Image (cartoon, rainbow, N blue to C red; front, side):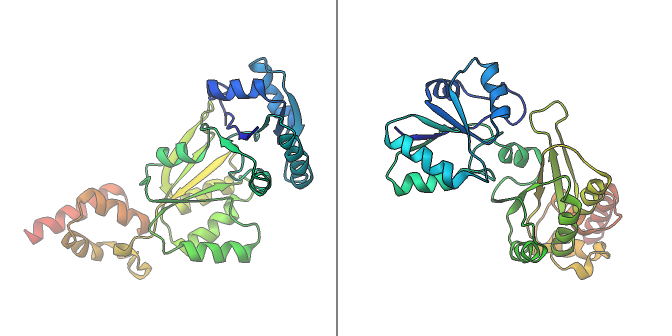
Length: 278
């Protein structure tokens, strides 16, 4: 029998597929991060399958136990507390064990926080790079951010409410004050997505924000990458116009760097340059 990875709702319990419910009912054992959390979902849909814990502290030992069950022909389903297991949640260890033992693997499509956040952010959805949670150690985190700083990809991170302000300070220093969106509580009652700047998000996290957070950041822009001209943003307008960019595109680029400038102020400055050039 295959090892089956099953996405579970990230907020609304209705965000689960009929196929996922069918497989959960048939499973001989469901491995989950927290049996109490998964029990809520199973109770909602009257599923009686056996639960065992599978989390960051026991995944190696429990993984071997689950592989033994799979080799015996049992149906093993793997879930996380929310979303798709293996994506910033336990799962990779048992996936590798299954591959090493030539065990078939199936991954069901379903709920995750990344794609809704990317589309809700208002930033370009492709190309994008998903990292997950930034490293805990400051040196490792800053080294990673430095490596990502020159990529043109939209960058996506999971952020902890308790560590977010500190992590955002590093991003602000290394990336500059880029356009960014903080997407919060996806599929829940208080879902929100706010397209603003890294500095504004950092300040908001300092004040305290609850819930699960996804941070989406605009990628490196070679046409507007020099921070030395960030404050004198008007000087960049003629060159950007020569590159054939629209007023809207130029406005978005300048907002990534300009400090204290409003969208209307930037638009008016762009139109003024266009009038002079014509």
